[in-house]
Image 1: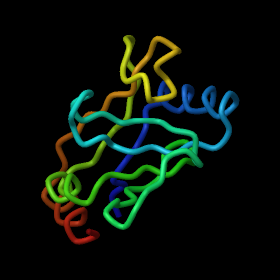
Image 2 (image 1 turned 90 degrees about the horizontal axis):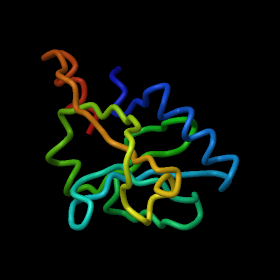
Image 3 (image 1 turned 120 degrees about the horizontal axis):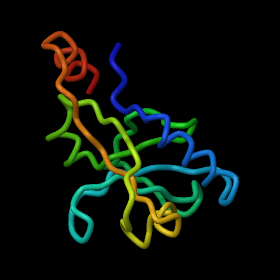
Image 4 (image 1 turned 60 degrees about the horizontal axis):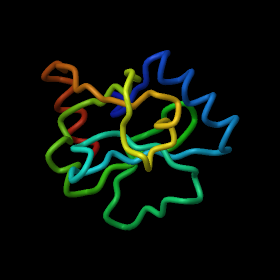
Length: 120
């Protein structure tokens, strides 16, 4: 089984810091607009996911979601969430830290791509 979403050590450290400040968290891969497509961090009870959201997994013990439409394009990829200096969205909890979450989609083997596609 291939994890659909992973986090770097730097991202996991930031997640722990944010949990201490805000309590339980959740993540949603934004689908464009103002921030392009970026991982967004919210207090767990302040962002409502719906039937059109797909749970990709967890990072730092917090659930990570993406809209079903966007997932249809990315279902063959694995996301690695990292932290980079700079200001991201004012809506994402890491923004006041002078950091922003970023993602990469590493190359996966044909077998991993097949496994990801089959897990839908």
